[in-house]
Amino acid sequence: MMRFVHSLPYKCKSYKEFKTISRYGEKLTPIPIGQLEWIGLGLGLLCLLPLIWFIVAILLCIWVYRDAESRGMSGVLWLIIVLIAGLIGLIIYLVVRKEKKSVPTAPPPPA
Image (cartoon, rainbow, N blue to C red; front, side):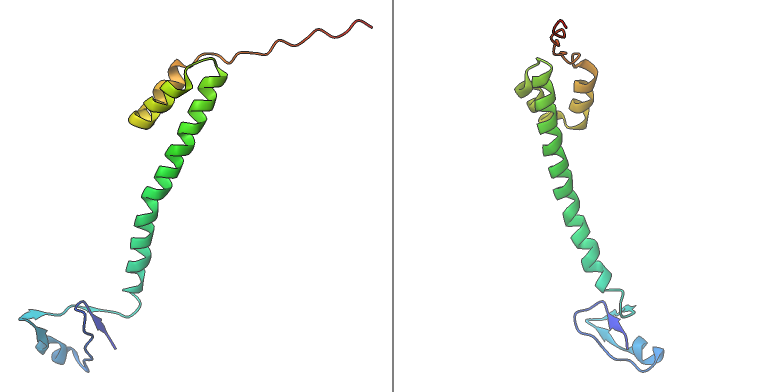
């Protein structure tokens, strides 16, 4: 049993019979059963890729905002730059960011 590219499946007993069947003057191309089921999976994965890219971009923007604020820089400015420029904005941020402010520790109490 074979499925065909067109919406209506046809059953052919032989290749000779398949060659004679046509729809609207064009020949049908046989596709073995089991091959069409993978198309849905592929399309599903293609729909997931932009969603995953968007989630990663939002998480990177949040990290850049928090990191810039902890270093005494404008977090909102860097958030906007990374949102607009994407990966290039992130690379620019990593190059120009300031050193992290170290919190001075209190000297130990005298013993």
